[in-house]
Amino acid sequence: MDNLTGWTLDHLLMDTAGTKLSISTDTFTTAPGAFKVDYKFTYQTGATNYIYLKSDIPVFGVPDSIHLDVKADGPQHHVTYSVTDEDNELFRITMAQYITSVMFEETKTAVSRAVPGGTSGTLYFPLRFKEIQIRLSSTKIPGQVYSGTIYFDNLQVSYPGNPPVSVEDEKLPTEFGLWGNYPNPFNPETKISYSLSRSGFTNLTIYDITGSVVKKLMSEYQSPGSYQISWNASHLPSGIYMAVLNVEGEVRVHKMVLLK
View 1: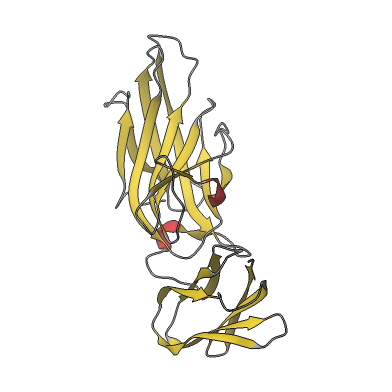
View 2: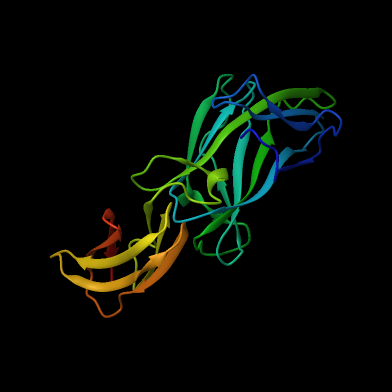
């Protein structure tokens, strides 16, 4: 997180002059820099003070976790991510822990913690990353001025069985991967996500537990990019099925569960 392009700062009940977003080139976990958020507010009885880091970043596939390195300033601040899904519905994903460490700490938040921004909704992948919301903490003394600095670096997502990858690098995949299916378990339809870092003849085939082919979903030449393909297994019995992605001899395998 060393470039503010595509990011904006918003806030609620904050001192505008004392609250700003910049790049720190001397405090970070990954060079050359990290987001630096300076904040200032005067506490009012019953008020809650928020900072919002807004963006609009596509996230391919079916990630299971969001990662973020945070260096705070002591108080128990709280972070919530905002995302929109395939239907453009808003969901919020709140960290399970407060951010308090005065040293950089890697946080990991399960995407399964997502709750609808409205009264109800079902999360459908792929997602778009919209916002990092920081709810600021204080000793809540009316009229007292509070100020501090929080640093953020390495906003990433991870996929089952794979290391985290940068959210901001999602524009064009740099890795060949089979990123899972959603939902899983499923009945009877699911969506399988994969990415190609180079062009090649692509085969995506479904096998049953005996190794027999049950469906050839894809068999064509494809360019680099992120892809998602639906599979309807209404005619098949419950069980374990394997999705096998083969691009000119390079293979990835993913296990899926059909549960009727």
